[in-house]
Image 1 (cartoon, one colour):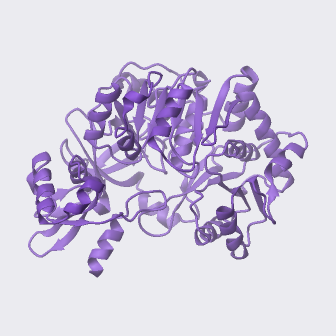
Image 2 (cartoon, helix red, strand yellow):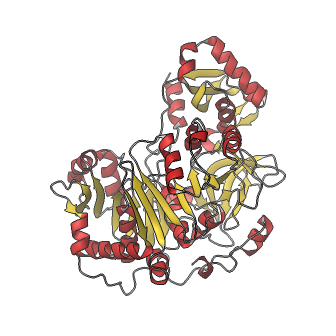
Image 3 (cartoon, helix red, strand yellow):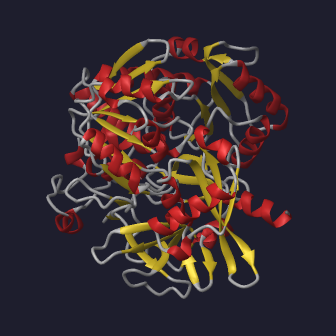
Length: 552
């Protein structure tokens, strides 16, 4: 399938990749028809989705079944009045119905809005009114449906509520009854144009209300690189990305690029993350490829890996936050597998990565994906030299990259704020070394300026994370009359170190940072806490720590 969309499919070096990567975009592209239904026609029994849950159930869906169930779902949704451009929110955790519903909405030319089950009624009200959501499809669990019903009186655009079960409360339609009883589906004559919006995510920003990131129908093609040349997938792969369907990471790793590559997607539907359970699933199902954020790998390496047969696992990728080198080295020592880091945003596909033909540098994100014209610039717009810090930007003057977002929906001012003069500003700061590898520093707003030095939170956090006392930490700057700002560390301690909070431990941690990284970066202020403030998607809210310090 991938051959249809690339002029060259095999690459042996970064130079070859830069010179010859070219994605071919059809005049009209629809992922559901052109990829999933095409596989169903060519190889209907080809494995597409292997789903299991923490209750011991398991189902292997073929591409033929995916076409069948998505057609049924599309017919059902059409009966409810859902059509081109209508916005539908999916609150479906890791249930396989997410894939039925997403494909169905693509087939109708509607807009998919994935959302997390952690939303409160207030969150739901904001999203429904910001996007004029017409229908909500949700898991039929009381804690979720109660929030939806509580929000409904203040959501005038919502016309239908659908439950996939196990419960179907009053006011909710029954998803499975609806799809199985719907008439045969007929494909619309013209379901979409390439520039139409197909997918929107509400980003869990660390400041302000979530932004509505809109992607068009060509967005899935941007993930060819994600799956085939970062996850390193083939038609024989069984790939496991650990992510709830409410997060952008789900379509990065559990849908678009993976099915273009013809891989089988593994989904573990669980309520509570347990490292040993993840390792058991890898062993039980013979998973070949794993992608997860560094936090997951930090937990995995604390397990006794000799208890599990991980021989099927051959490739691991990591994204979502910067990777601490200590995690890389420990995982490689225990498994022999190198963690291949990648970087991107909800607004993009994979932007910077360590590709299979490269030697990874622990802690580095890798090099730019040639799909994007990536640069590092300073505050004056100058491209910085090797070793200098700059903001990661994507230049769009020569071409608009496949995979870059269309706009912040209904907010042209915000779109212009981050994307103007043919440059998209990511808001992330990095530096590159002499070999062209990029190293993450932090969000532009988080960089600390102390005594003339620019200090990135991540490099100090990485140093602290190599100390056994530290489970989690956040680095922020606090005002200082002499230095402008000084580095502050807010730390969650491991259980065995909690009784030792005091000046001795503070000095031990400060000295540790001085040894591991440049001495001027050490935290002059250290505060211990039971938990760090985070966004709904689990990102640390350093802005909240700064606000608390300001009030204090």
